[in-house]
Length: 456
Image (cartoon, rainbow, N blue to C red):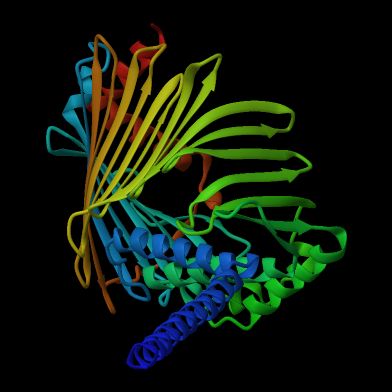
């Protein structure tokens, strides 16, 4: 009897354990089913556009963070600069003795712009003159060629009215950043008006299809314009735009995405004049096959961290390489084909920028280099650029150094009341002006050297 009772108790305990296990398995199944449903429900063409929006806007943020703050606007400005040239070309070495100093002043409020040019030879002034625009009149002042200010011409329109309008619309660096982000957000949001479709490719992959048809293109355009016109950053730019001003091609984009890693496995874009097929080879590496206006190209795309590299092939030979990288507050661009182009923009500090440009002509063995530094403070900007052109035998260096000051009352307006209209001068007076210019140039032998080179 006791054995039977023990057996009954043991069976009841086992029954409870089995029931608990079944309950747990059922709960896991339910939660797993709900979790899978929620996970699968999040994998939609619409949500993927949101992911793309976040990714692109994050890249825009990083890119603009690499650019220093812009100079102030709405102020008067005076820029003083110096341009010099050095060369070992035996026919041009005489230019090493010359320099050009300039002063550029601008006041939109006073409707005055002036450019003073001073040609120097071994630091001695050779020719000095100032061109200025006041309202819609052009003047020349130079004691070297004429005693009075000359009124050269009158423009039909007042250019300062145009400049004042541009000044009102001038944007800060932060504005350009926000405009770019809003544009990206709105165009991808409007794309949700396309025919969207989701297909399960496999357990680990899902396909999103975005189809642009005659029926939905107008909806996309209207949606985009509505978003822009109600966007604080874009409404001024799009206030007069109409949907017919936008041109969207008819076609289809197919994306195959890894469900779990969210990585693109393949992309196909099929439009009338553009067909692109991108296929994943390994993590961050893709084969690219594109046809643009009946011209087919094949290449390989590599995306790693913040660096994008694309190599174009012809019969397995690399014919063109493109690289773009944004790293350590430095944006670099490289293009190699028959020629090579390198561009680097480095943010040295919050207000300092360094720019480098290099262009090489491989066939002619000629290179062009440009290096520049730009330093900004609240009311001042300093720039220095060095340009170099060289081949195997010789080179030429051009240097520009300038400083710009910004303020509220920097420009002094010239008194033009005694200006003489050039067209009212006699033939003798006009000839005298020409002679004065030539005499100044002859004093330096500059004119003779220019003529000798022209006759070579």
